Image (cartoon, rainbow, N blue to C red; front, side, top):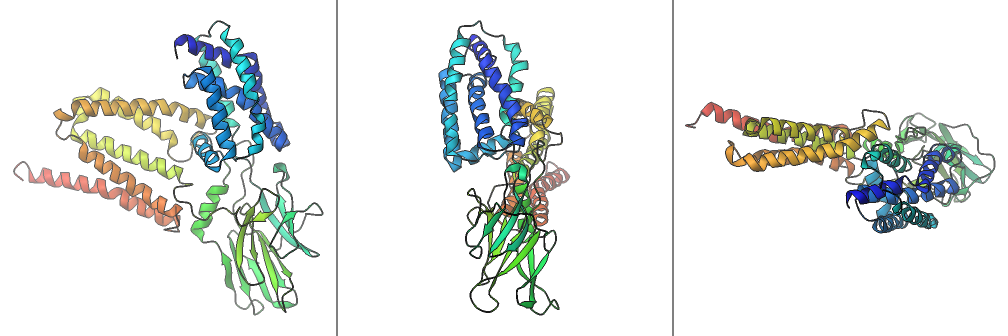
Length: 480
């Protein structure tokens, strides 16, 4: 795309139709969407986003307007109709702001909004190009609006449960996300929305009807239920989620969206026991577990975790998995990258590259480090400053990485070592730091603290070996 074409893209982004859509996107996401969540406000954001996204893509990707419109429509369709597309969009958006994109084919009703984007481009193309410096004012606002629209919504939470006649009713909060109570009349096998009285005082313990010696109780702050059959003299664990998996679930349900309240922690809040047909003492137990949904013990004694289903009930298929290799460890991934880059840079310094090009190597290494820093670990700055830091970090890291590679390639024949060993040590360091957390995401080890300990030990092994080797070589001297 030429400078003139970039100017037309800016004119397209500043067209009254695009600006109106941009204002509607910002307003809708920060006021009506929070007060009246639902399909109307959601589709309104989709329409506005489809008008704003094509000119932004044309400017940032430097592609023609028809290609930008086609790309926007294609990606929107993939994201809204496929689970893989929604997950990929969630991952990409989460690099800038914690996001969760959900596939919803009904959102395709907003696709005709691309026609408005096309008309705005046709009119903008007839106008004089806008100067590129104006991008400093226009582009950040558009990027902010597009990324902010995908912020993580507050998750529903099962806060209480009670027996109401033949139904077991689970109270769900908060009402601000359209949550409603859910009930089962068949022993927890199926669930449906409940529109009658839904306010119940949470019970931390309950006994089997007609058997006062057989009771259940929750362990506060844990996903765990204890059972007694001797009136409370002894208690044993009837159902529990291991502590490491609770830490995992807390990451899944964590809500970092500053425009809404944080989600509750996954923990058992209340339980209810209901007698069911099937013989003397036959009963079910239903436990309200906050954002994790419910746990149900059926009449046979089998426990199941049920998550919030889209149809207003609970289902085992909707329950969050307790393991998912490589997921929910983005912070650890970036920390491993940052540590490995630090090891690589220090290794190249020891190899003599800093002495050959002190200014170029020093500046490039510093830019690479500073550019990667906003991605490593939870954001230090509040949103949206963390978004600005990450956007600024991308070009800094790219420039620094290219600079280090250029110095490496130009001076490797004039230094004490070519840097290959330092690169291998950096790769081994990354693997040593990251793989324990990858294993933790897969359930082995279960405890997060064990993964941290393994990461420290394994991550320090390769650099420690290299340092010890070089110390021994210096002590031996040239003859050795």
